[in-house]
Image (cartoon, rainbow, N blue to C red; front, side, top):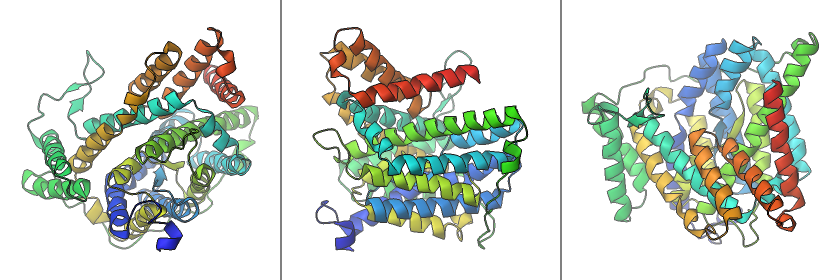
Length: 435
């Protein structure tokens, strides 16, 4: 095991990697309930999607662990699943089989792009200061998700979000207690502080009525298999053009969500090299591409690298063993759905808030003296949070970076691939306007 994952070379050990894997899984296990719930809105069977999510997540985690040897876990992408159900199926009127076909094509194209090293080149073309901004932006985004999941902040008519006026009751109170308890454990350097915090809050939630037995069967459900609808694509010109637009859109969102997550988690684990590159990027992107393809085969929307992986990284996870642990837990979840489903949202919300705080460290290394570096970095962070989208944050950052450099006489500072990435974003904007 030490030789396979190179634990000593990465300054880790088996115990640390197992704790990291448990922590990552605990913070992202919600996807096993949320993803089927969202996709069932377009007519898909909840239990089949649950099984598909668990199996596809496990397989992609095993690829990431054994092939890439990186501590980054994968599962069904939040946001993309909503677009799958509510936009493609409910609004545009296409069947979920049609949407799965688009997902399959996206995965196959991603595999081809990864084999040709294009995706790796895109990751490495992002300027150093933007890489730092992406890492910090993802951290703040993770904390924002935690605050929302913990019901500490809620939607308000006059503002985007506001403090929940009932923060001293129920889920908000339990979330705040979780932050305090976990923070104390972290300050005291307790190993597995985040995981221990999740378990404590789960127990405290019992007398408060927040931790409830989810119910359900302990027998694993079977997923879908190859439920595609190629004939529906060629019904007429509109269905074909819509299929191309949707596939390209899925490509765009998945690509830059994954890029942002890899940069953020690699930065947190000190994996980014002096030249700005990330070790084994191509292998990591291949795991993502394989995951999406396998997910489509079994019946779920796009699989992507999860920002919650930063929880395991914060616990010391540095190798693929962390991800293998997550993959095993995804498979075991097929048998213990009622148990993991009982973990209250407040428990994982507290973990996300603190992990997000730990991820903003790269902000201190951004070059604040050069406005052509500072403004794009600022826009990356700001838009990532305000749009609730990692890919949109990168879009604003890259485009503003290219424009500022080009119109201030610093065009020579731009790499060819940076121009290519900017061009991809322009194409994405045009597609959005036309659609």
